Length: 260
Image (tube, rainbow, N blue to C red; front, side, top):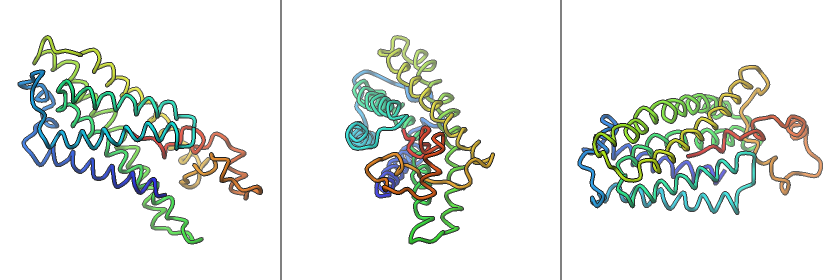
């Protein structure tokens, strides 16, 4: 739970800051995606408010690579998770170095909202059974959070991301700057990011199907059962049930651990 609380606070803060940049300042990038390349030059100065967002995100994903390799339990999608963190960090560093920072702010805004909802939902899953009693309010919030998370994942990452970011970088960039450098490099990484978003969305759909068909009756964070060092010698009936059904979402892609 401390990990989810920390990630929730980080993503909430970082996403709120990107909301401020896109809707509380004069940056028109969300409503006018082609504007990310207006007056673009290789040596243009990076505004301090955008540079601060880059410093925060770059530090976080640098740590995430280390945590995935040496601190987190290795799971089925850990390789994809590691690739995601590496691609994201490369995009952050390269886009800052080559002055594609306007695109970067739009990418961060469209991705962080899903992680805010993911960590908030996980916290309520933990809280619904705290103190040896069942808390209906947290269970209801977790259910609603799961639905909202799936919808926002599709809308922000699979609809708005191609519509705004990929359209701007693959089409509008060539119209604004015909000889723009690193065109294929950045678009290849952004396309890879899109494919990973689609990969995790398939797990979200599979999880939702299990809930709707009654194969899973309640939301649970089953990560603890993936770590042998914390399993008890005599598993409870709940643990036996988890162990006898290896296709549960906790062992099949862990929707609760997906992030970007």
